[in-house]
Length: 390
Image (cartoon, rainbow, N blue to C red; front, top):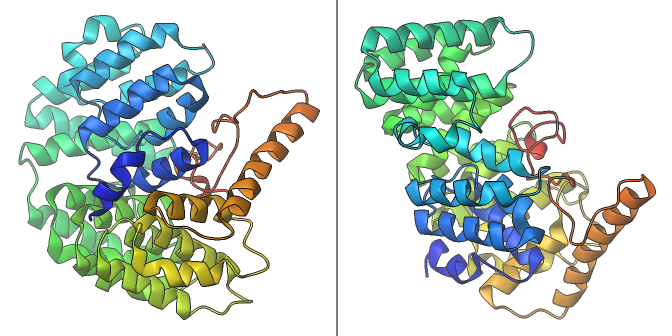
């Protein structure tokens, strides 16, 4: 069975722990069927306990026309404290679709959104390039990183690529200039994004070499581009970076999302090469990546890992492994213990919140609980594990 075939029966789960593992496993995977996105949206609007988790984790999935209709129908019924999560999804829909539903969407999206959508849909090459250059310049000069502005620049970059207004040679020239600098400019980072859109496989080795850079915005785009290839050539190029503590976070994320036997083998090999005492964080990250592969070939390694007496604080390991075994339908004598340990952390968090004067309803809303795979509260747009949680 393929990864999608294994996970499909659990896309909607009544077990909140399994539901969260499904959302984690699908978040960065590029081939989630649009029908699943619709199922998750419908679940979010019929089950308030899951609403914030689902709306946060489907941000990388494509919202099609039916999805827009679902959002427009249900946003007025939402708790006001949750509406911003749905609006963030509306901000990411394709410009042409956005313009088609401009009248009902206007109350949620600002004027800048509409001017950009009009430019992307109706602007000529010179106009789009001029706006793109202005956006890059503003991002490079800004004192702090503006994630929303970067998303708008990516929309312009996609428009340029889709209209054939940039060549492979142009992109390669940008990259060569950037490689000579200590830090990539936003022009270079967006060139990496363009490589991902165009699926330029010849750049796989170069992108892999960027994984040891100390630039999280660049690394997010490098990872997304590499994952998008869905190729064992990517696994081969990235595998050496699984052995380096400075690059393992992004490298493991890439290999985790290449769903193949070769990827599973690479993760197992990297795990066996770690030192049990000195590299606990790395071990747990690799086990998490293996669990999200949903491969039975990883069962012996995962089972043996759970014999450890302690785990890294960076990974909800009991929940992750509980979800892995449950989705695969495998039994284990400690399965209930793992479930109870994961639920206990949820309860501890709720009690801590209550003591702080901010009581939460049960189960915990993921918007208020920062896990490794959650969006970082600093507003960077990155996962917590790749930002303030590093």
